[in-house]
Length: 467
Ligand code: UD1
Ligand code: CA
Image (tube, helix red, strand yellow):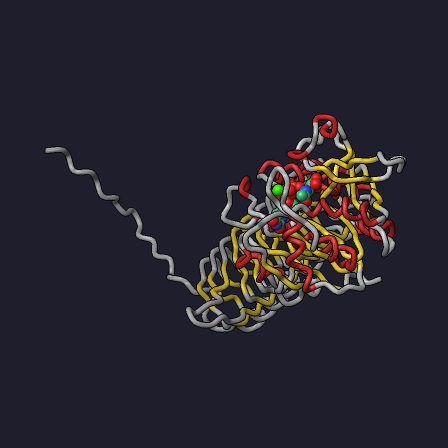
């Protein structure tokens, strides 16, 4: 049977104390509700219906963005009269022939295999609930079993505020996630009322309708609390972030990655590591990052959208962000400390980039070096070029960007300005302090600065005596 996903995301999230709707808060760099949709996509769901309400104007553009992983329909719930009322809003958008998986937009780390197992338990004719035992079940809906000669079959979910003292002792709770045949769900939703302690339409009341209709209710109980953890406050968001990061770190270490401290590692995207990669503490990785064999990353680096080839060493405090254009660091290159590689930096093998050097939209061929305090923007740099301290490409004339070409084996002295468009011919030398506005011939020495003047025995001015 086809699977349709309903994501409840209308709630206010008061405890976040934020102008950003709760489901747009980020975990591992990704909005909470996007985690849920990514998981739904792994189920090969036919459709996703997201119930929006609070902050809908901010939430819906993300859900409906081109390239979204699933075909999403947004349905608004205003006012919010409870989880049952929320799912009622989705009814017109749901086919009768599917299994509906109900998720919450603020529960980001449920795994697809868990939901597959839940769907299998539903089997197209049963109500399947995802449950878990909590030592402290306070606040959750309790799974009431047994009674009526049914052994330990599930009889009802009783909400905290409606539960008797005896029911409050029950440790098994409803996670907020269920799989249910659409046809049955629709019929049951039509029978909900709000005669309860909170005056809300409880989705969880469908359990008693199932029991009354003789439909089996099955609980799929898991032990992994992270998968059902919801986020209501900044503290919970941070706790889940750390737990998730630690889990990612352990997963990568099982594949051979060496992390100096898995508790001080942050991955907000995808990382792909070859053998013998070492990462020191407090590094953040974003977007798509690939690290070749033996790559070493020093402490406190932020690295995004970049490919670092085998044997390269990134020294501490380096910032690399390829954004859309990407960054490539060639084999055996040495980068940093305190280097900045921006989009379109394509560095060949054995390139050296030292401290306080910025490279943007430039290629540097094998063995080229810029070791101190320099800027290379929109430049094509040949093999073995040595680019002196304090030198820059003046690539922007205030309206347009222009290219600087520095051919192989050129030596650029310190504190030079190369005013683009300009080409420095192969093997040439530019004297320190030069402002180069015209292209130079291969092999030439070019100096473009005021001639030095020295005045012999010059008397420095004296301070006047006080009156
Ligand atoms: C619900 C369950 C409870 C379960 C708990 C797990 C009900 C009645 N109770 O509790 O059994 O143990 O989840 O966390 O379902 N939402 C809407 N519209 C509404 C109300 C809620 O979209 O009118 C959304 C919220 O934004 C949230 C989700 O539904 O994403 C769950 O709501 P929440 O208030 O957190 O659940 P509880 O009622 O506490
Ligand atoms: Ca509630």
